Amino acid sequence: MTDAEDRKPKSDEARSAFLPPAGAAVDGDMSTTSEFAIPEGLAVPKVTGTESEVTSEFALPEGLDVSQVPAADPEGSAFTPPSTYSAKQAPIAFTPPNGIPKVSLTKDVPWQDRMRTMLRMPVAERPAPEPSQRGGDDSGPAVPRVLDLTLRIGELLLAGGEGAEDVEAAMFAVCRSYGLDRCEPNVTFTLLAISYQPSLVDDPVTASRTVRRRGTDYTRLAAVYQLVDDLSDDETAVSLEEAYRRLAEIRRNRHPYPGWALTGASGLLAGAASVLVGGDLIVFVAAALGAMLGDRLAWLCAGRGLPEFYQFTVAATPPAAIGIALTLAHVDVKASAVITGGLFALLPGRALVAGVQDGLTGFYITASARLLEVMYFFVGIVAGVLMVLYFGVQLGARLNPDQALGASDDPVMMIGASMLLSLAFAVLLQQERSTVVWVTLNGGVAWVVYGAMHYVGDISPVASTAAAAGLVGLFGQLLSRYQFASALPYTTAAIGPLLPGSATYFGLLAIAQNEVDEGLVSLSKAVALAMAIAIGVNLGSEISRMFLRIGSAEKRRAAKRTRGF
Image 1: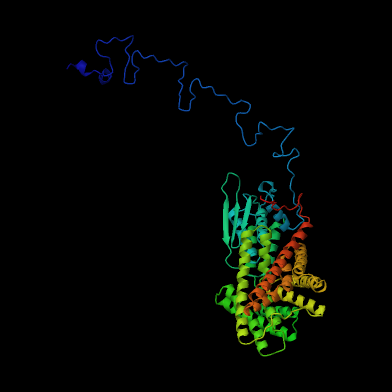
Image 2 (image 1 turned 90 degrees about the horizontal axis):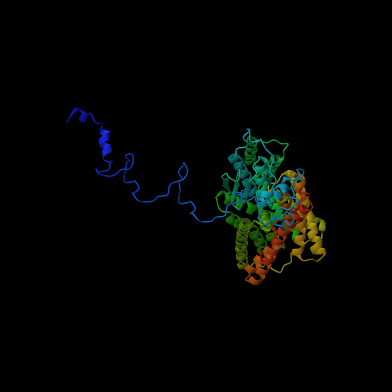
């Protein structure tokens, strides 16, 4: 190999593999062929234009006629009116020509009515809250902390016996006071939940809390209402830290009445109730002693961790035992009045009213749970009294189920006994001292109305009870609106004189004497009286709201339902 051949570029060797074989005719300059080259003789249309066109599977085949979208309206949306829409003949399904009326809520009405009105509105029609800087910085409040504060406030209200609708209104008020607009609270018997969505494209923030323990303290309930009222007031700037501090003080607040005062109040309640059904001084003392002994036994069971069912069962036995003992000792007293007075101190009127109120306002799950709780308490009372009555009958106690328990001929004493009963009931509910006077007067009015209708007008006890309870609810709602507080402290204790203690006792006594039919009739009467109390209280509250100025262009709306829909 010569030096010239040795200096030959290797690229020529690599290129020689693509050269045509010797003897092949080549047109023009030498061209390079490969396996991707188009075979000779295959006619391929030449591409017109300077740039190549790229086709894909989404390209329309040639010859397919597709109508083009008009250039004036290239893309439709939810805000584009339909092609059949006419401004002159607009159907009622679209926005009316004069627009949707603006909802404006005045601030000189209680926050309960304003929040309840907005909760019953559709979400799109709720007025947006004013910007709030109560969170501490320009970026707005801390959403998790606001939701946590809202749940803690709702927990105290629900544990204190407040209705589900009022708890939702309070939770909604707390959220709006800190500028959270799209909030949806949800309240059941043991679970509180709230959801907040910052915008339509953001993920919602949801928090929940479980109510595991319930207690009756209307002083704490009033303090929580005052906190919510201050948060809803624009002139009162309450920061999150201040709200948390006040909430902690409310939780640590001691009960306004000591234990011995509560025990004495239960005795006064039972004694006053025995006077209402025709008892004398001896009956008053016997009923008071039985109720106080039952209260102490119930406290002992509670300290041992027994459920409330057994607490009610144990608390119902001492009054019945004292009544049986007086009968066996041949003491000339009304043993039925003693037992009836003890039952008045145990009947769960507060839970009954709250359960019926939740059912009437549409919270059926919470209402069912509350009424089931009332049924368990009632069964516990029945078990305790029935056990004592059964042993008393076996020992020879002559208890007459037909013994009439009527009111005394002295109306002043009856009114005084009813007011004393309401006073003792208010102390048992741990009410503020400023509300005790009002609820005592309200209880006296309730008994005056009931006595005038039933004993003077000879009207049925169910109708008389419903009318008296309606006035209790009406006056209680008006007093609570005047004080910007909850209506429970003004209504619950006032219905004490109307509780069906005597009907319950006679039903249990008939069952103990193997007269089941008469016993069930009497117990049905007791249930009817209890429902009349609850419905009457709720109806009186709704009537008061009808005449209150809520501040909206339209009245408070509820769910409208017709037959079959």
